[in-house]
Image 1 (cartoon, helix red, strand yellow):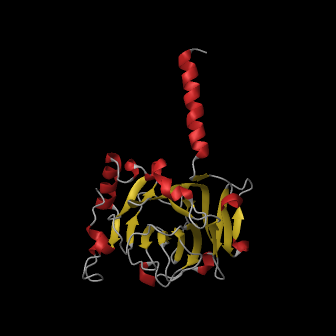
Image 2: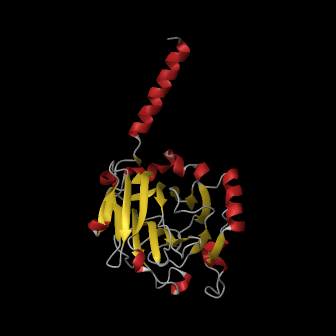
Image 3: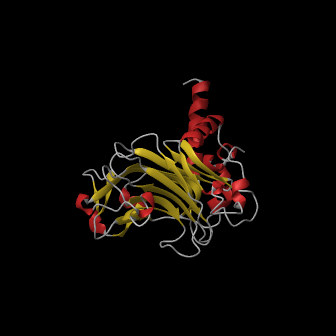
Length: 296
């Protein structure tokens, strides 16, 4: 081996050592490695190889799971295939939350997939809570049928911004202003959850379309969970003060790239159904965070 080859090997060994010693957690393990069933274990099944996970909803109950670990900042990703056919009233939720229940002081980042009548498009609703206060909904159409195949839904979370991605396309950007505020969740570690449940009192056409229980069970599918984040350890993990060593909290992750800005602009022009920042009837005084530019 020549000197150049020796240098390359040493460089690879050095980089591997850095990755191995990183305090941030990287996980792609099995369901059992990462998750616990929250309720209705009999409504949870897996494929024979354990790589695909199914949650089902019937008239009696839905089902849900959550990560065993909490995280503060990182990249969180999962592939989902949603309930096909007539799914009116059915909500598949994929979200992060600082508490196991809907506590009054919780922080939360939501993806919610709102079912619809056959032939009508799915809508995705995102929301952001800080200290129990949400009301920051956006709704989008999708540019594909999310029931035909698996698609990737991801959240990038650092102290500068929260970005919701669909197949690596940024559909929502929620910025921080760098000051103490009441809108950007950046202090509490969060679990990651997913669930399927009946919400026919509001989910489809404001509750006008009810769930057709003759079509139950309704099944959503999951695979390829991936997290690269700061895993929480009480009282305070070392990685919280060193997150800038990781790609998801470095300068390039504090802003959209030029290509991402092009994708985001296309989404804004074509797919946004509702934006709370533009709902002057609901919010006569525009919320503070709405003045922050997603382009910065």
